[in-house]
Figure 1: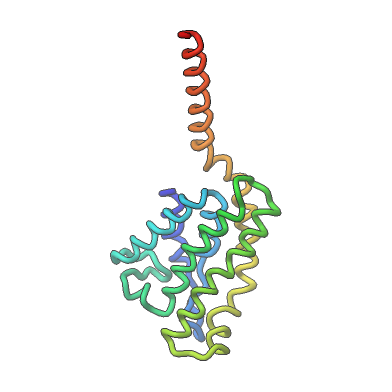
Figure 2: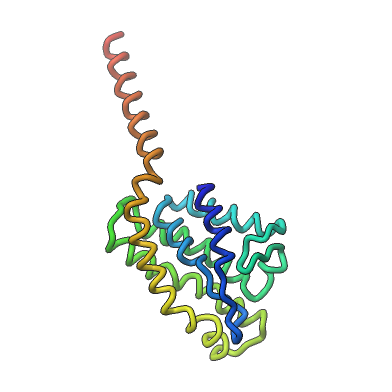
Length: 189
């Protein structure tokens, strides 16, 4: 979780500011997808939540190396909240399996959640009409997000087992302990 939170912080620095939009192109959506595909919903939410808290206390972890409450209250704040919701929902949709098709469908369904929060938020903060909000806060990012969705699925496919190996080991250890306890209890009877 910590490594993925750090990766999200670093991805915020991979940022291209568009001259016609308050929203930059970043690698954050790629990493949000990866967090969601690699972690269970609770851990995905905690990971993104930690990143948001780091930014709220002023650390420069939001896009372009910004931090502080003003960023969350600003034009891009809705996207940040959308990241949290998307990470949890994508993780829920992908389930416990590491399947390419299910993961792809999950991220394609999940990414619009970011825009469902981010675009209206930006519209209100910047006092834009819907056409302007969609033109500056959604349309320029669609092609890149489709590429990031597909990339995240293929990046996470081999990483899934590595990231989740400790969870599997804990489950196996717990099962083994239960079996040993049952054997011990049966011998004592």
